[in-house]
Image 1: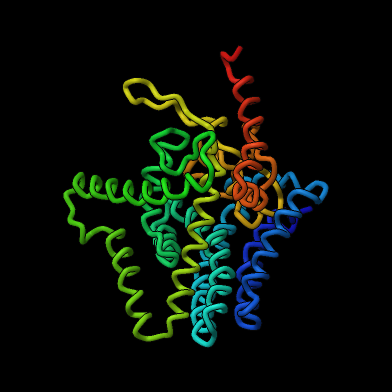
Image 2 (image 1 turned 180 degrees about the vertical axis):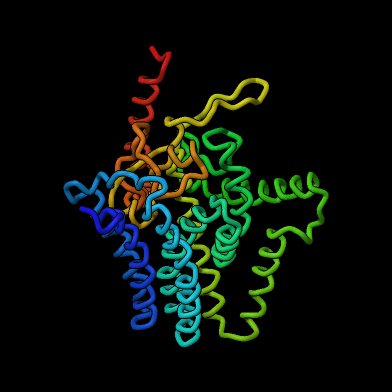
Length: 352
């Protein structure tokens, strides 16, 4: 079905405003239970992905150059003020509540700023347009994780699915072992990469957006402490912890156990279909703007999200929403993923 020059299915990405709008409603009307509602929504998305017939396959890509391809990126841009409004509303609600309310709000807002805010920042950061990349910095600074803007594009993309990449999980590595490794490794790598860039361009640290974003994050905590109740600090830091935890859990899922060959001289095999896990589940793909078409994204990093194509490579047992729950229980995760890794190894070229 078409709507003018649009396919009706192209409008599915409008679902991206549903989660922040729902979270904002719960933050304002029921802050004490907003976190429970947010967890219930995440479980519902996982159930829809896994249980609804036909929901395991998303509609095809949007044609490059079409009206939809030109206008759908505005979903990402318009999300930025919505996230900022959600953070302000959460802070105000935390100031009026107790510690339990602040923790509930942290979960409610953090699931949105992590699941969608960081995902949209990731997509905006891949844009060729400077204003879009600025908006990506705003979103990542709002979750106290601005070094992602350096490490992801200059670190993770060149090194994904290799042992050099702190954001790629190794076979047999549990989520709980992966998290400390990726959190420290990504932070340290980002600062090394930024130092290298500044030396190459003969610029000072004062010209680094990473320095200014990091300084803003550090300075904001004592400012909030002096102006507001402790609960606001708990909310601000808590939503960041939830958001970053969600991001790194998704990183864990995306390349788990997959590895590109590296020569003795350090040359890496080109990134291919087999080096990322994919899922084409309709609900989570609409909410996460096709992030689950991950192989195509890595092979064509500048490609806008509506035009990403599903690939025949490694397939996850369900969408990201469901895999997040699975990854929390290592024996369950290993039991589902290791047979898939073994099957991929047997089907690889040259395998006996």
